[in-house]
Length: 129
Image 1 (cartoon, rainbow, N blue to C red):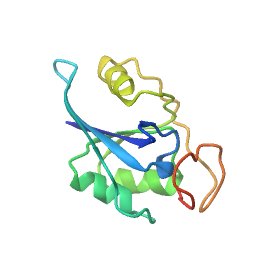
Image 2 (tube, one colour):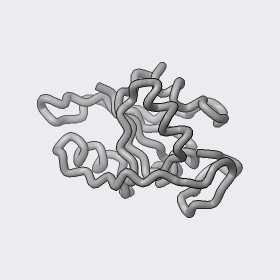
Image 3 (cartoon, one colour):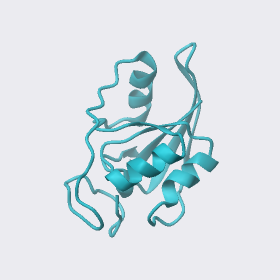
């Protein structure tokens, strides 16, 4: 199983569209452990690009702080499990909590569409949900 998290400046990015990279964790859910981790740069962000790209990287789970409803729908179409409303600094710790079943995810979805300022953007400028 591969768990993906958005990162900016090597920290968990609270808004999915603000990520400058993604941490991809191969995990063993039966033994609740991380078996490998890699950080990769995504393609240029445009509507609908990240869900298909993450699917092509093998991601089956995404942990994110915020994401717009259009992106949520696109991930659902890719059959990728989403956990939204995650608050974390350390991506490794977020994945460990996910595996242990103690990750707090509020399910928060950013309601504004397009280029917006919902308070979660801390990465590339001009990104969308």
